[in-house]
Length: 571
Image (cartoon, rainbow, N blue to C red; front, side, top):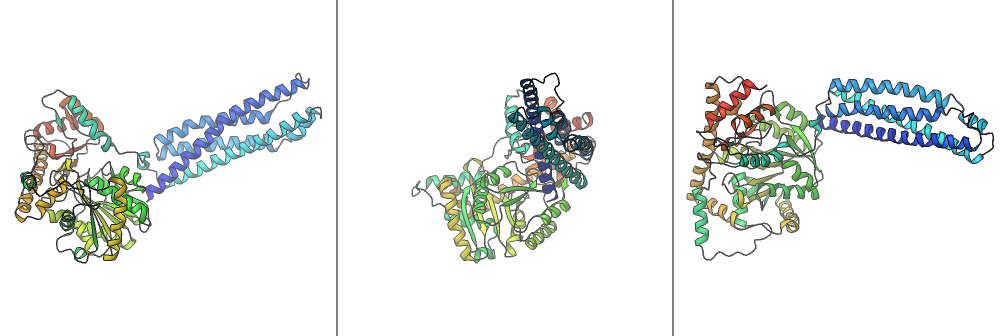
């Protein structure tokens, strides 16, 4: 919340500076025009040789020029906001303010320009006299207004300086690099003709041979569906496949969930995790009393877009600590403590994307207690259930902790990773309500959200999921294959850590085995990433995030060599 307040102050100061600078440009143009009229007027009166000095016009011109020059200091502050640049800005603008203030007092308030104008013109041309008096007053008002704007900008700068400002990127609402870069990385990788090239930017599982994987149990389920001659291709209901919805709710909340037994859960089939988030966001924007959602910094690149387009206001809470390459738990608690009562909070259920850093169960309990005490609404994004630790139940534990206390929450599920159904777009949104009656009414409103969005969901993907989840043998086969995928990723983490240790690579690399899930934040900087791409043909996002699923036993040594070279040769 401190960061959010700082951002608002920063943008307010930027707005004040912009307005004042535009006023400065306007004053220059206005003063030059007024000087021209002054000279023309006196020439018409036949007194060009005794032309008086229009100091009030010169004052406006000087103020306009000085204000425009102050844009340079303002520009420096907005591109690198820090205590030193703020101090520079405050000193420069305050000095200019004193000079302008003194000049304005002397010229506009110590001299009776109305009397001087009347004396020079001497009633010969009343129209010109009135013209000058009117514009004198306009100049005086503009000068005072600009002065007031500069005072406001200085006050905001002082407040920011006292608060200890963060870099400008903490205020940014722009699309995070991960969303833009993941596609650019793949494009660059495809153009590279090197035989040793390695793509670690893709967010999808790969086999030891670097190939996409279709689970055996998925192929078996599909074959059963194909062989079933009774199946048709009719539209599904707006809420989707009923069996799929029931089984999905049980998968994430637990088959013994009291909320399910009390019919307090409503589940609708959606278009994978993204679609589930979007439907939930649009529902909240239409029907929830708070329209602010707090998301972790950093987070998946699509999160801000999904929530903003749905009509929610996005704010951030601290999550990742670069110095430790771990969780900024204290910062997280402080920011959520400062969030307004009732605000929505996005939580990654497990395998946080992109950092791979998850809270411990004890930390999750503290988060739960804090959120419930403040009436914050949890919105879980569960994209990796079973894919993180290899256990479906363990990865769902944080969600189940919140559901067990009887409070409300939302959960978006995706079967892209844990069943490998990336292109089938299979997901579900579940909303846990306080009563069965509320759950029923929520479902009717969800239908109104879905109907104009995509009418109703596809049938093939959820049929695969339902076939697997309701058959005990196929379910067990899935959990075995799922654990094999998770174990391979965990093995890649260990192998990379061991390889770096064997090479004596400077630094502590234990975060590689402490983090969990598909992604790892390596801690490499932009220059080191660029070096690895150029010299070793290894592709990843510039923030140093790599997909562990893109590694294999054969490519780990190549990556370890590249990291070692980057760390030792590039600072």
